[in-house]
Amino acid sequence: MAARAIWKGVIKIGTLSVPVKLYSAVQDRKVHFRLLHKTDHEPVKQQLVAADTGDAVEYAQVRKAYPITRGRLVMLEGEELEKLQPADSRDVEISRFVDPGEIDHRWYERAYYLGPDGNVKAYFAAVAALEHKQKEGVARWVMRDKSYVGALRADRGYLMLITLRHADEIIAADALKAPGGRALEARELQMAEQLLAALHGKFEPSQFRDEYRDRVLELVETKAAGRKPKVVAFRPKKQKEDQLADALEASLSGIKRKARG
Amino acid sequence: MAEEDLEDLQPSGLRSFWTGTITFGLVTVPVALYAATRPRGIALKMIAPDESPVQRRYVCSKDGELLDADDIVRGYEIEKGKFVVVSDDELEAVEPRKSREIDLRLFVDRDDIDPMYYDKAYFLVPGGGTNKAYRLLAEVMEKKNQAGIATFVMRAKEYLVAIIAENGILRAETLRFEDEVRKPGDVGLPEPAKVPPADVKKFEAQIARHAKKLDLHELIDDYSERLEKLVAQKEKKKEDIVRAPEESSDEDEGGGAEVVDLLAVLSRSLGGTTAGRKPAKRAASKKKAPAAAKRKPAKKTAAKRKTPAKKRA
Image 1 (tube, rainbow over the protein chains, first blue to last red):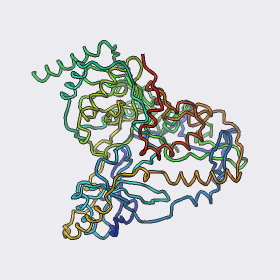
Image 2 (cartoon, helix red, strand yellow):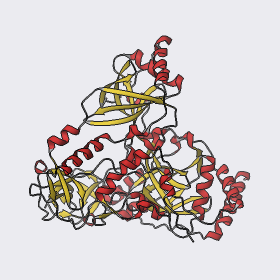
Image 3 (cartoon, rainbow over the protein chains, first blue to last red):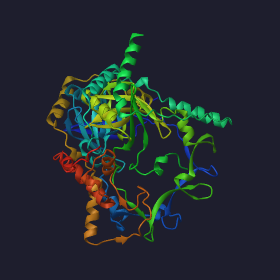
Image 4 (cartoon, one colour):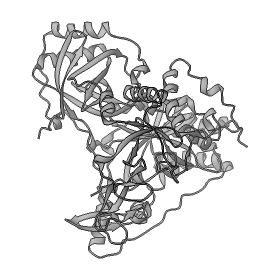
């Protein structure tokens, strides 16, 4: 069944335009729980309350404020905030094209497929050109009063737009210092490399399934039938520093044994 | 009625989300998991007409009682209005091992992972005792440009995860399961159409003309910048400034008014210090973040140089 488009826009690449429809490329499959009040098992709801008295406050009456220093706030009127919103537009402006990998995957947030909205030729011409040139576009657009930055890519013969996180959301990899200590021993490094090589393979997403989901539903059924679920605790082993080399050695010989047998 | 998430009730990323063990072969690496991304944008305070602060709280839908995290349990709706309550212990016992262990049985080339699979990033810090196994795993994975793959359970959900090393620090990057990622056919995209080469050439020419290096300035949150500018103007003119009573506890961090930046928390957990270690006031730390990010492309190692590492024994 075809999915519903969540937005329509026009990609602008220099002087060229490609009208597109936007579809979510990912979907959440999590088991959904409700939050309940512990004592009476009634569902909870969210409410705005005055912090000091606990009295309910209507949303319409709430004003927004920006904290400048502790205890000092600048009040912001709804009108002022509205003026800060980006201007409404259908354009997805591509500002530049970069090499794949230049945008670290940590910037990627959520993927959307783009489908042609009318001009099918322009759409597939753009796909072919991105594939030939091996480039990724940096896109900017406004959707539901919010501005987005995204990566425009060719994906399996179609256009994909992945929204990117903002600069201040990501903690730079070099802003933190790696944990230090005595230098690692060459022998341990070598054994660890061998272990990695022995466990090396291809990434096949289809090999992994969310089995936990099924188990949680089983748990719910068990409890619904009035049976008591089994509760087992797991205690991970602790390893001392001087046991590291032994653990590596034992892992390697274990893998070799398995390969032989 | 509120659906999940209990995450709403938890401090925003400044505490460890999960502690457990990474294993590869028979080697165990105790770790604690922290958020690797800051929340988006600026959190504005909500103020009641009488200028007192407003909070978002959970209340019981029946009697309106104000609830804390301790007063709330998870329930699964088996039929309308009928719930089976499940406790955290029960949810953990469903997969006791996966709830405490990330067992890396597969290492893959990092380029093998389609970027659309990546979901959220977390930093892993050594979880007590020795950090030797941690450093060993980080060093070999980084050298080989490989990621360790596993599934594990955190907060009542199973995650597919890639363990990645960068600059000697391990990260857990959750990946979407295959059934959470749609294929073009699932969305109903049309069959590819044949296009005249001349049309493709036109696009290629535009791509070539606009080919440039990535500029992280493009990722600046311009809405937050406009907001800060407006606030600065109003502050200068002493317009609409109110004094709010001190909040006894900050709902976000649970650490009172002195707020510590995520970066400082992480640095301390990794056994080092940074310039940001001193507790900063909320407004100051919020303001600093975008500016620091702006400078980043130019001065990549500035933060590093300022921070003499505390030697670990």
